[in-house]
Amino acid sequence: MIVVFDIGNVLLRWDPRNLYRRVFTDEAEMERFLATALSMEFVSHTDLAPDFAAAVEARAVAFPEHADAVRLFHLRWEETLGGPIDKNVALLQRLRAAGRPVHALSNFAHETFERTRRRYDFLDAFDTRVISGHVGAVKPHARIYEILFERAGRRPDELLFIDDSLANVRAAEALGMAAIHYTPDVDLEAELGARSAL
Image (cartoon, rainbow, N blue to C red; front, side):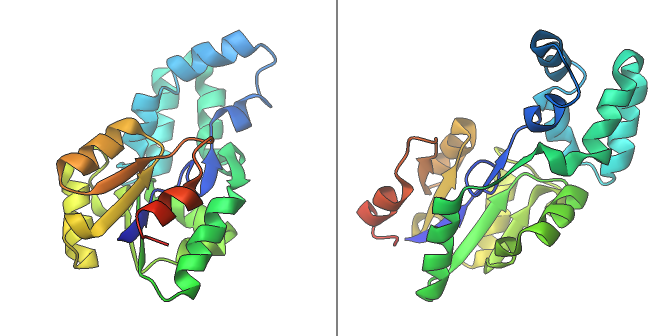
């Protein structure tokens, strides 16, 4: 099986709380902000937006009471990152060292992916990278998976997809891919070994 990695919270920790705990002194107020002005629905929209900065600015205008905090999602986006998940990055590097193809399929705004790629060189280690902001399609919609199949030149049943979102895992399985729902307590090395992917 050929491994396809999601990036956020599989190879690289990501959580807007990493930034906004430095901005809000009240945890409950921060959570209200993240449920409304900076909801995951809006974050998913930015993963497709052709202009990330413009999308964030439009959101700031729509939530004037939180405009300054919303703008930080663009200005200080790197602070949403929590650093690499080292054990999983090591698996990626091990696969590469063995000469095995490795692909990435991730929801990421074009601008934020480029900013992140410049910080973490392992993001250049893939044979194929399908990034939502580059291709105009987002998980869990079928089209982004189909783009992966086309670019990787592989059938779905040849691929093993790893993602932290159960919805994205289920979408992959519906298209014929094997998939692992990754959570922090999953032993990814053992899971890959059991599927003859490592």
